[in-house]
Image 1 (tube, helix red, strand yellow):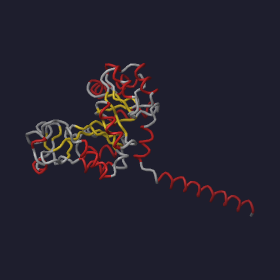
Image 2 (tube, one colour):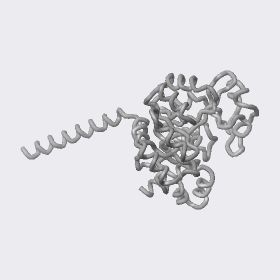
Image 3 (cartoon, rainbow, N blue to C red):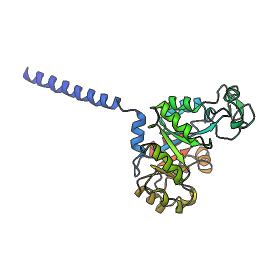
Length: 286
């Protein structure tokens, strides 16, 4: 009898500990887990960024592409921010709506009402998807993934920051900046916000690591070298590299081993138009 009581006590204690552990994890959103990973500059986990959402079967920069990204559990969703003539922040890569919608004209010359009347295209075919606002995208992706903001809205950084505050997504977004001046502005606004900085040559790397530091540095093929990757990692930042273009094309046509060209020196964030293919490949490589 005593042995049975001891066994039941031990079993109950185990269940209580398991439940407490689950409750603790339940209180941490997936975004917070991804933030922690993102901030591990030397992290061996390769994070996958979905370029303009997961848009292999749906329009780019659409809510459908963000739903696919959430379902696929990608680490980062990249999206492009522009402003309408009447100041509404919307998602569109190009300056005009000509390629991606059934309309014509510059985004900044059209009102939000005019944009709302348009439908997005996928591979030239008109769909039922509409142009999302940045607010819609942030509210949907909040807690599900990190969001890389590629700001193409000119001098609208202040409005974007205000919207990030309004939606409570300060810990969801990654600000993509193109120089140290923008880096300082963002970090002075919120020192804890994640920043991805753009580097176009190996000589442009070091200036980013002064008083204000990015959590990741976007490099090009031109300086995708072991010494540059090591320099960035040793400065406490992740290395972001694009598989867009030729690498993606080869991965889709000849096999995912083509991704090795962007993985070979230790880049630990890869942006791709084929996130599902890359995630499966990384999982297979452990």
